[in-house]
Length: 223
Image (cartoon, rainbow, N blue to C red; front, side):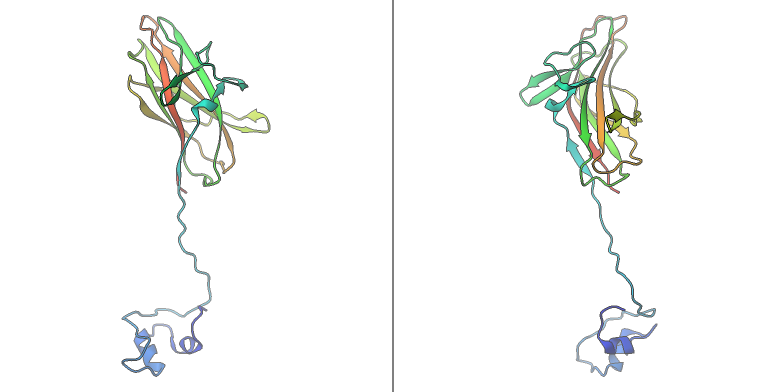
């Protein structure tokens, strides 16, 4: 029973209008409380109020200077790209990850980082990794793509890739490329190992350009 005065509990009956209840309590026309045209349509019973609860997602940027060499967790990314490795190019606004130039050949260059799902992540909510990337000056003859692998890190081992989005073709202007990560079973505090890649294929050409990544973020949905 809600916390109402005892006389209310006695006089407000199922389907009885509040105006009738007011009269039953001996209240005159000008007395308080006054009731509008509300009607109680059922018996008052004990229960628990369950107000709606809103849950919020958000975006969490990853620090570009925290990326590590592929398969070398203790080693930060070098300034220049190496064999199958992304490099770090300093800019006036921070650091970009950069790949090797391709000219009548192919390159697959990688870097990796651990990203922890924050305390405000809602279990099972959508997980998107947003990579802002481009290819410099001119696209390669065959393809100039950006890619992502996402694996859960636990007890010193990695699970299978749970990124469901394939490599995406870039342009010569920076743009956002979204990669979907399967959220099933994910909870706040989980560590995702993110392996980003710039994949260049200039077979049959002589373009000689490379890709760049200026920002990477986790975009977490609502419940």
